[in-house]
Length: 152
Ligand SMILES: [Zn+2]
Image (cartoon, rainbow, N blue to C red):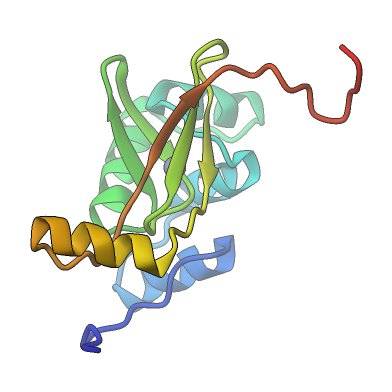
């Protein structure tokens, strides 16, 4: 099997994300660090507006423009995730391929790593003639299962 020549280690923590910035020679301003910290704390998909609000609520003064510029820089370098929704862009901490569970009732998007069986991938490759290198699945559903609560 052929392997990709440049294997980039996936970002799995805030430290990895900071390290990736340094490797890429990106300036790590205080504001940029605030944003990375928040995304790794929250582990949600947030809009630029929500990121701005939360940081300012935490007493971390950061301007609107700075939030937008940093999100743009971080997502274009593949350090954070950016997803396009009809309501606008959302940003998340996981930048490598992963799947989403879209909760239709709460509007939440949960990250999940799903690994399809090799046989299924081979089958899809044979059907389409495309060598699959990555995939991401969008699941949709309702939050009917209350976590940690039984009998409701
Ligand atoms: Zn995600």
